[in-house]
Image 1 (cartoon, helix red, strand yellow):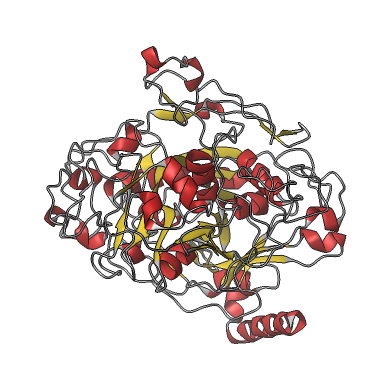
Image 2 (cartoon, rainbow, N blue to C red):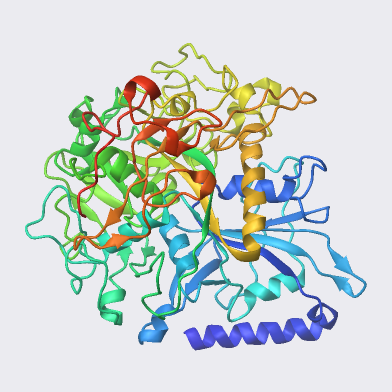
Length: 624
């Protein structure tokens, strides 16, 4: 099949060359090829298209006007490294956006463009740090039709097909190389997640599951030390739809385990902070009908499979299906260490007592010990929300996701049967608005908070009339007090992570500009996350400004089970390039103008919020 597809791609390129020979001499310039998390996929697209505040169109450095394209799947990132060890190319498929400008020369159009394919955070890390890096193409197929996957372009414009000289880059046998990663977790945390998955199961199985058993050739919890294919390439993590996540080794420093080539040290560019929110679907048996709040302990009991029933969450008797993300997801890892097992493995893992080699273990679809519900794996946010929880017709169900208007759209009243989908508070704290609405028609504090049903998930249609019930809509028009996600900003809501992009070389300048523009978009257009840096006030529009995130996740050194360090020593100060793991690190408050390294870990002076109840912020994670 692969030979047939490659032949088709070559034939297609030949046909294009015969039809439009004038385009072949004109080069399109890829300013950045991004692979990674879906959490900032939409805001980055809006920033690329409309991110120049002075002109109102096109990212700084691009020639206006700009144009945009989105696909519905049809694109893939290809990791060719396994072929050097006798393996096959690892392929991850999903949707892409492309934004291009109007640059031209006397010889014809030579557009600049940015492309962003959304895959898991750890896939983005692997594709960026791997040597050689992944390439992005259509897998030998024709260039897909426009999909209009993003509905909130500020000027109401619709997608267009890119010019031929951009299309031919992606329909080629080897597409443009990834030059930036988008990730919800630090790359050191991503590499640790890969080593955790790519090693043998513990014996006996336990509730912490420091290792996950997708490669029996590597000692439990140890990053591969033997650099052959059997040790570097583990079994895929699968779900019931046939989607997979590749367990494939990579390094974030030193040399690549496949090629032996030097790994390029990337620069991390923080973009925003987004909350993880529990999403519930009240279905057939009504087990979740009265549930509006969940605690860490309740979720640990539920997701570990010990009690998949409404009574576990304080609801009615009745089975609950638990939808679990894949362990190479940034969403999964943020939630795993923030809510379930914690960085020191003092809690209970979502993977508790799971053997991927057992019946129903991979793809995961196993009946829980009590309650009759199942633990079910979903690869990607859409598989646990859109195709999982929302469409689960067997039992009531629950999942979690990074909040963004795009990520949770399928669970809003606009898409889900009104009243049957809701978000839940975590440990009594609302992750989106000031105050949770636990009764239909309850009093709301925030203008953009819907209250028709309990815990109603906001959608574009729920923006206030000042925005004409649509985007663009500023954060100060949605939230009372002017700032988005107030409980995250205060440190009260603990389940969140900083969204980042990582790049180097020529692409880094574009990524820095894109990150800055994305944060302005998040404050003034589509508030999907808290900007990391300040966004200035705009008197002309009435926007009062945003001081940016004034919290920090404390960084720490990651280790494997042999005590081998993963990545460089930790550095907290993102202004000089943060390093080290920080997934669910302790939350520290800091003041503008004072570097994070100067913040003392003292409750009395900083208002420190502990990583987990009873866990002090000075903890050192145990060897993993």
